[in-house]
Length: 200
Image (cartoon, rainbow, N blue to C red):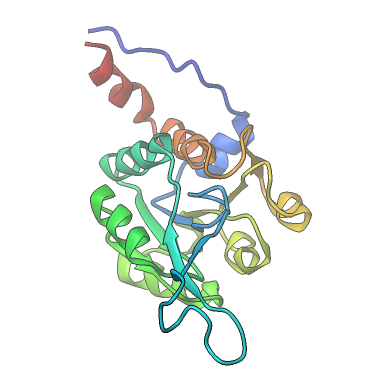
């Protein structure tokens, strides 16, 4: 059986950085989503529609995820790379999506992401040299500055773009996380083997 050669190409120095990666940290808003936050109003007449002191939204009820990113997270797990989500927000929608993808390591509602990453590393028996991370804004910098390989979507904040070893071709929520996953899979040597399964 002939192994399929990847159509993707990454710089050799990136692949070297990523070779020993066994855990990948992901932010959510702006990385696994486009960063938009969707809020709805309570219907007129609802007891919370106009509380004393101002208006109140019903809360974030919608998130837009990209299926390319989701499949990338599944492929990482098949290649022995653990995806870990660390996010400053929390929602039932997000938890349901991660559950559907089989992501078991997730930290919600934390703006201080470094301690959460250290807990994940400890749980997995790994250290920073075996980690990669993808983020788009300042709260992600403490993790990105410590890992072997850091990545940012093309629409990340300027300070994050400056920190990243790799900037994706597409923005967050539009396949950026999949590009990061593909880089890790190629570096692991598993990309061609996994791709072959879909070419049969």
